[in-house]
Length: 352
Ligand code: FA5
Image (cartoon, rainbow, N blue to C red; front, side, top):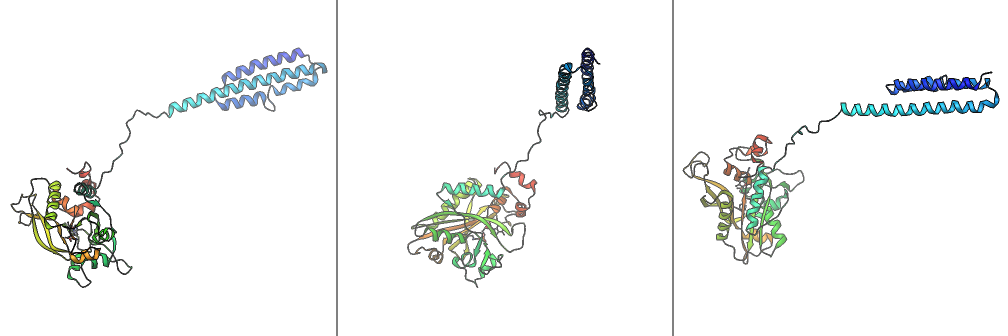
């Protein structure tokens, strides 16, 4: 017969041994090994139950309690060590993988407005100041709007100047100028007076050169009213050009021809490069062209819904890329749409 005293000694010794073992564990794996050694199926604490049958029956319940409490004690200590080790492991990982947030970040390259957009906005600003409103009209037009309603019938020789891209759907094309917008605003507002500018992209099927692109912007202007004269046209355009190019510049109006204006004219400015003395840029004339304009042709007024006996008006069309070329001495229009950052970045701080 085994005495309970003997069991008590064994329990005390195992408790001591368990504590010593748990002091030494250095990783979750060590903990698992200690658990197997003490509480596993053949663990030292588990094996204590083998004593029970050898005890007198009345002592067995107490012996059972002793063994169970040793088990619980060991398990609790084991859990505490495991938590400690895991916390240490996380702390170590955090230290090793720490990010130094005081390092300066990598700079993000900021985009800027395209020079054409900046020129368009400057043009809007000037004309808004003179009471004009900005309207948009479609880039895909009909032959009727791009040509016929502007007094250019199918066989008119002026069509040669405005050769375009036709769509596969008959009668549709990419507009060659913003002038069809004149008809759109007139038909929308007739018979009220109009002061509108119509910006947008235009397309021409032509040889691309340093001065001509296949796609470019235009800004159309249109004023319709009861007593509008050529003097109003001159006043508005000279005011615009002074604000755009500076007060010191000189301008002249030269007779020209457009089927949709009568009379028609072109506006020239003294050459910025040579100051009017004559150079390669101005082809030695001292003048450079900045826009086309004229008094709205009676046929166009009628097509737009206005009675030409009662209403008159003026219209003009200019290319913002050409205006920037003049202002900044840019010698090739292809730079605008070539996506070369070395060119575009020069405008990122705005127009000066
Ligand atoms: C016209 O397109 C007329 N619709 C302008 C007009 C409007 C006249 C209203 C009278 C009344 P023109 O083809 O000259 O005209 O073009 C006008 C401007 O567009 C030119 O002065 C130029 O600045 C610009 N432009 C024309 N073709 C090109 C091109 N291929 N590349 C870049 N800019 C161009």
